[in-house]
Image (cartoon, rainbow, N blue to C red; front, side):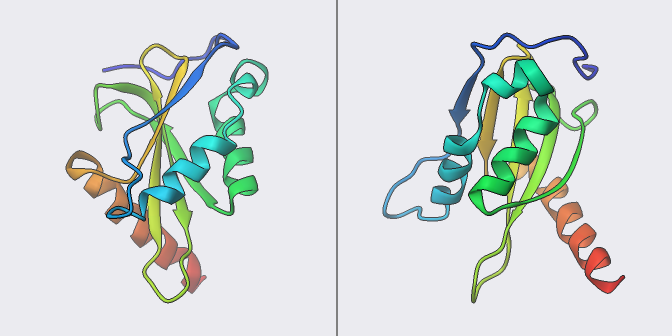
Length: 131
């Protein structure tokens, strides 16, 4: 399993999407908006979590938590989970991954492999709302 990257990240980092933005898949627009908000230059200066927190704030999403990817998935080093609050609908959770190259950020809605993490995020939000 991978450990969290602790070194500096190349400022030429990139953001890629696993979402397909189409009229038939409008929920992906939230993931696309978050991608646009991520300043990959911040990766070098402040790290993954700071870059994702700032992108979440500027795109109207709520940063919930981050964690090392070890044990959850082999295709990345670190994962952050964000919540997008939708009026009149259930909240949507977005998964942001720092790929194993330590330079590429991937934004997507939870897939089957990440569904357990999305369920945990939902329970986390419910717990916080009761405090």
